[in-house]
Length: 250
Image 1: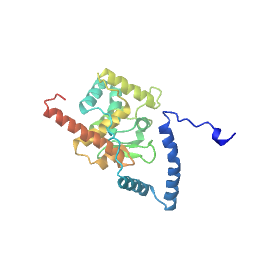
Image 2 (image 1 turned 90 degrees about the vertical axis):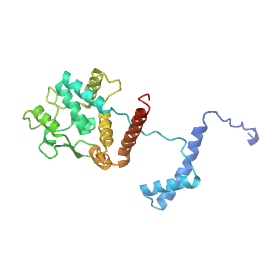
Image 3 (image 1 turned 180 degrees about the vertical axis):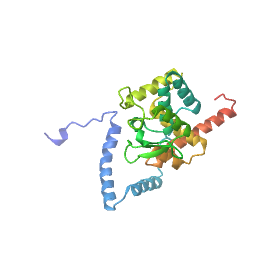
Image 4 (image 1 turned 30 degrees about the horizontal axis):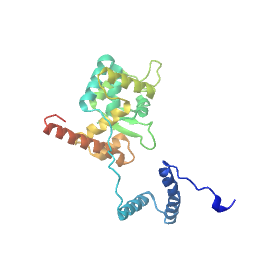
């Protein structure tokens, strides 16, 4: 068949974005070759990309609102207080989860041997952490005393155990937190990691804990992760200020 008799390709509407990304493959390959040639590290590649954007005068399409969901201090107090009234052990679980800032998987693996309740300040060692974020976290003396009472002389096993003397699963703790929030009349979807968000922003709201200390407390490897909490904290303070200035109508 002659070349002139070939049917023309028809452009399909809706595939333009896919075609654009497919066309970037050659650019990615060439960029990778250049970065390898000049032995650029991670920070250097970030610098090159930023400088290229500036020289090309490229602007973001829109500002991404970096924020995290959280409970405010009064909601946390209501959650913990309500749970203590209905189930003392679960109340202590939620209080410890909140005040330790632990991820739920870190929390359920805490061993009694990892408690340092007589220290100044008392501390918990979180050993079941992702990557290299194993760490000591300080806790309040009042919580340390409650944990002593809870253990009642027990020196081994998990901090919180089921009736079979085994650790709680992460899913069970999630269910406990969710049910407790509903019983406390909190309309938000409440889950263990939300408590971690909440303690982070409450610490930053106080203005008494530097962001690098909050980073260590949470076990963040990059301070940029902690800065998201700081932005949320600052935004919340600004919104509260505007609400107060407008007579609470916001």
